Amino acid sequence: MTTLTENQRVAIIMVLLAVSIFLTYYFHAILMLGTVFSHFFYVPIILTALWWEKRSVLVAIFLGGLVVVSSLLYRPEILTLNDYGRALMFVVIAFVVASLSEQLKGREQEVKKQRDLAQRYLDVAGVLFVVINADHTIRLINRHGCELLGYREEELVGKDWFTTVIPKASREARRQIFDAAIASGSAFHGRRENPVVTRNGDELILAWQDTILTGDDGRPVGLVGSGSDITDRIRAEEALRAAHNEANLYLDIMAHDINNANAVALGYADLLVEALEGKEREMIRKLRSGVGRSIEIIQNVSTIRRLHSSETATRPIDLDAVIRAELAHYPDAGIVYEGKSVRVRADDLLPEVFTNLIGNSIKFGDPEVGVRVRVEEGDGTVEVSVEDTGPGVPDAVKPTLFTRFVRGTTARSGKGLGLYITRMLITRYGGSIRVEDRVPGHPECGAVFRFTLLRSDLPREPPVSPAPTTGRVISARP
Image (cartoon, rainbow, N blue to C red; front, top):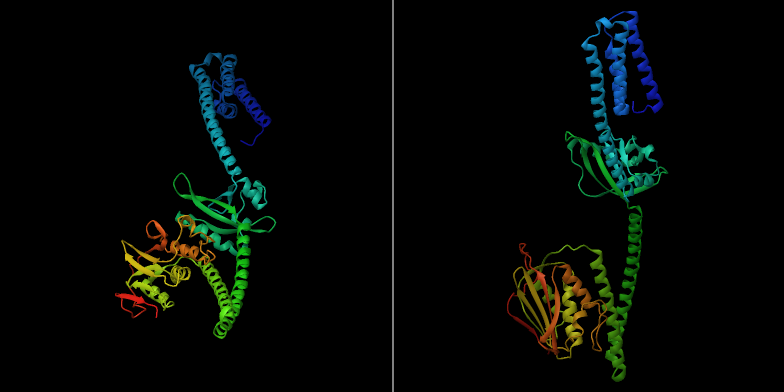
């Protein structure tokens, strides 16, 4: 009935009223009966109340009056209170049904208003929203979803979601996942990447998430899903990954070839240092120093690449073994280290920290520079100190010393990558690093670098180095 036009409704009511008039005439004038088959009169009254609410009262009054007037004209001697009561009942029924119809239409309008409001909210959203019934058909989809898939709304509503927009290769698997979610009443939590196919046959990748839609009885009746188009991002990531791999390949080739060339240059430089004297020997030493800086730069770049290309997966590391291995590179330096066996959370790049800190102390200090390494255990952490008697770090430089490409103030300052890498590694391990004056208030008396590492509570592995864990170790100059 809701699909009938206004003219069709008027025509139906007129026909029913005409039938009512004929029945009244037939029962009174032809059959000469005192009663009329008035149950039929409720049909036009109820229909009028449903379609036009209070106007049905006029129809009820007309039909009630028809019964009373007809009885007065044809059989006035048997007119009873029942006829008046029947006419009054017509009016009461019309009023009750009209009131119920008004309430029902008011609720329908409110529901429609809320539905239209929700639809507007969905339409302005920048992602696809869809409601999929338990039978796989599309109940609702927003405007952005239609535009994304290339369909009009009426072309999608009622269609099978999986047959229409899911790629054939993954269609059956996705359908099984959907059915399992409906059966269990629990959808997959979190986002995932789901492909869809547009009307033109293009495949898009959506960042998808969904939830179960339940009915009034709490049983699953469908699924509400949303997806944002991340196709361009995925393709850009793939292109970036390919470019990154290609760039790494070039860097590997360059590092390998440059290191080979540096090794040859160092070999000839060592031969020339022994063969030359005076000014020529000093020039060769400067040449050798330049080659050494080239090797250091390549090593720093390789370390940064390893930092950015690998995930933070720490494990128990023997700190004492790492420190002793680094001290072995400086047999002639005056380095004091009181050995202490302790295990920390780190990875294979931890030696780089000591390479930079101890190497800087020796490289930038005078020939008689003294270096001391201390290890102190705290509550859940280990504090390591590397202090020297070198030129120190000016107060103006301290705040930015660990920043990328910030250099010291001496003529032998490096390129500013070593301490930057050191800070990155310490942060990677969950610690922090700072620089202080060895003698508080006197930067010129040397510097001390202090950093923390997390202690490892895992069972200890057999020690790497057989060296004793306690005792003072001093490598003195010959």
